[in-house]
Image (tube, rainbow over all chains, first blue to last red; front, side):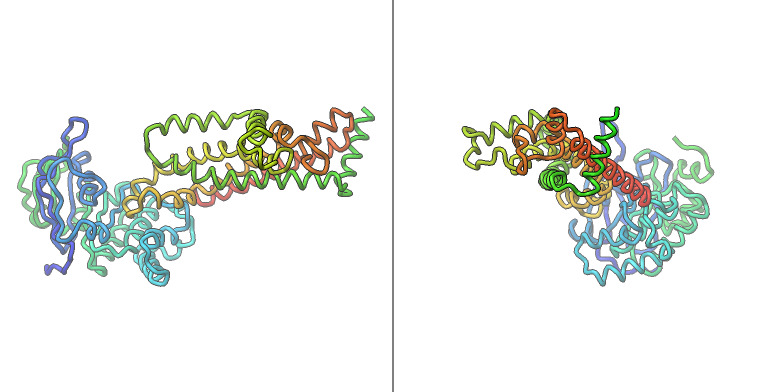
Length: 242
Length: 234
C-alpha cells in the first residue's frame, strides 16, 4: 500500500512509561506510527490502550520517555483530534455540536458550514442535524462525535474504543463512517479496540498491548495469521487474559 | 368573616380597576427588584463560574462563605447597607439612604450570593463533565466559561428566577434602608406590612394577591425551562 504524505508523521513513542499511585500502567513503550492504513491498538480491557491515546493526544504527560512528532507539538495537536469512548456532547443540536470546535478555532462561517455538511453526510446524520444531540441514540451520538472531530479536518484522528457500547448494527454504521473518512480524507486513523472482529475488518496494522507493555507491532494480515507472542495467540483464540 | 370577604372584593376591585396607588407600588417593586437582579446576575454569574472552574488555595473557604451568605437574613443585609450609606458611613456622601438606590443596593447584597453560589455549583458539575472534552478541542479554562454558562443555560435561568423571587418577596432589607415612604420607597412587601398593621386589609390583600401572582409566573417560567431542558436532553 502506498502511504500518502502526512506532515505530522511518523509519530514516535520513545520509552514511554506511565505510573500512577505507585502502579506501573505503561512500561517502556516504543513504536512508530507511519502514514497509511488504520493502526489498531488491540488488547484486552485494562491493557493501557486509552492511556496510550491520551498521552499521544497530549491530554496526559508520560512519567517517562517522550512523544516525538515529525513537526512541532503545537502543530501536531492543532492537526489531530481525539474521539473519546464516551464523548461529551454539548446540550445543543447535532449540527451545533459539529460546528462548535471549528468555531472555537476561529474558522470562518462559510468554511464551517461546508465542513459541517460534509461531516454530517459522511456519518449519515444529515437528517438528524436539527435534533438535540443528547436525545440521539448511543450509536448516533458516537457517529456525531466522529463527525465533530471530522469537521476539524485533522491529519490524524485518534478513536478510543469507538464501538464499545454499540450493538452490531450501530457498530457497523460507525465502521462505515470510519472507512468513508479514511478513504476520502487522507487522514491517518489510530484507534483502540478490544473487539477482534472489528480489528480484522479495519486494521492495516496492529499494535498489541497487554498489561501496559507493547508485545508486538505488525501488519494486520501478519498479526492475525502468525502472532509472535504467546499472549497474542491466546487472545486470538478468545482465551480470557488477565 | 364578612369583613374578610369585603376586603377580598375590595382588593379585587383595586386590581381590576388599576388603582393608581397600587400600580405605583407594584411598579416600584418591579423596578427595584429588577435592577437588583440585573446587578446580581452581572456580578454573580461570572463570579460563580470563575469559582466553579478555578483552582486556588482558599477556594473551599470562599465557597463555604458564599454558601453561608445565601442564608443572609434580609434585615441584616439592610443593616449592613444602612451602616454603609448612613450619615457617618463610608458612602454617606451619596445621600442614598431612604431612596430606591439604597433598596437596590440592599437587595443586590442579598441576592448576589444566591446567584453566585448556585452558579458555582452548576458550573463546577458541568466542568467536571466537560473539562477533558473541551481540553481536547484546545479550549483553555477561561475560554470554557462562556461555553459552560451556555451549556448550563436552563439551570442558570432557573437560578435567576429564584433570585428574583427572593428579591421581590423580601421585606427586611427594603424597609430598613428604604423606610417605606409613600410615593417614594414604598414597595409591595413594605406596603403589606404597613397596611396590615393599620388594619387596612384591602390594599394589603390586593398586593398580596399580585405577589402570589408573580410567584405563580416565576414557577411557570421554571416549568417552561424544565421542558426546554428535557428537549435538549440536559
